[in-house]
Image (cartoon, rainbow over all chains, first blue to last red; front, top):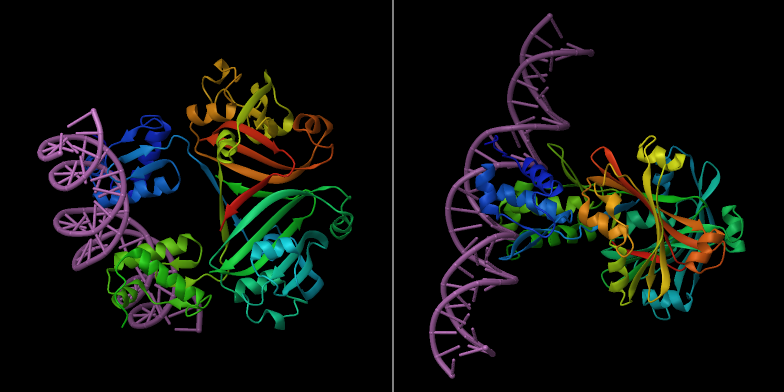
Length: 231
Length: 231
DNA sequence: CAGAATAATATGTGCAGACATAATACGCAT
DNA sequence: ATGCGTATTATGTCTGCACATATTATTCTG
């Protein structure tokens, strides 16, 4: 008998090893918590902690009464951390700069109205450019709902980007993100300094605070941008 | 005094509410676990569970002895679940189809060799098309390391995509993903049925099992594709 | 006063036991 | 057989307690 596995991280490691080595093949039912606890010489709570962690990582499927089985299709989850643009730029060791292009309180076009469900209300439309070492990095096109972001109308966004101001002053409870590829229009090409029709990476994000829309932002990144994540 | 908050999800909810309502503003130090436990009328372990969950979500920063404080910059983490393509297609209610374009054991070009660190070894190169309702959905270009995927050389991949076969037969311990925008070459345009130079969404993924490379795959999605995620 | 040794403190983790809950299996009545 | 109620079972969670560990504050010493 090998020496006891008494902490949850060791248990997790051993579980991962067995899954990886196919000792517990995909789809197989694994021993229950109590049995594993006996085998490892630790408390059931410890096994529970470990199995819960592995299940959160997507490698195990757990159901009450039915037991725990190895996931058939370990859904590869990549967590992208969408940081503030300034930080993203500075993390790459570049000098960050920001320029406001436009700021206007208007009624948004139908698609935006429909998504944000703001009806006839006027929203604050902000367009800005983010630079890394004086080279255009991303083009921001944002709609802000004053009802969801109190105080936003007093902000000029001359020097602080809406990106940062909102993060600090406006709480949110949820949202969604869409990533896509976009062909640069001539205006975008000029602003981002690339050829018209160039393939650009686009990120569109809607943010909500409960039921009220906070903001919708489209970020168009300069040509060559790639978003990285780990598995 | 409000009624006791005795389970960790209720504690979590209350903590989130306080953060959201700025009762605990960004950067503030919150009461320690023991005090919160007394206030909520539950055990410290319960508070711990709740705070740990909130911290994992990125809204709290915890350090021993220093205490727990509200994150200054709640890094928005979006977890993309990269499913098997077949499943992704079928989930959209479309009929999935697959066609192998090429399969060859060759020494990969320098960039691939460099990333996978496979030296002079020959890798299996597989190119295939995925269809949704008979329309091209994604173009797969994959390099597989036979040393990291035993038995792969016996597979023809005529009917089963490498995507699925690998998932079922080859364990992995880690990897990385890059998302980007790519301008369609004429060959790609023809295969995916779009205009040359169209902006396409690209996903490149490297997978490892310990220190040995398993596979590197590039997926080029048809025009208009968007990857969705929630916050 | 500087630097090292020591104390204090908040989180991290483990344990044993208990009850809650969901899902399945089984047995009984029709 | 068929359907329903009940028993069983594995996971989910809470509690109270203990000790571990990282980090900061304080005190001691030269």
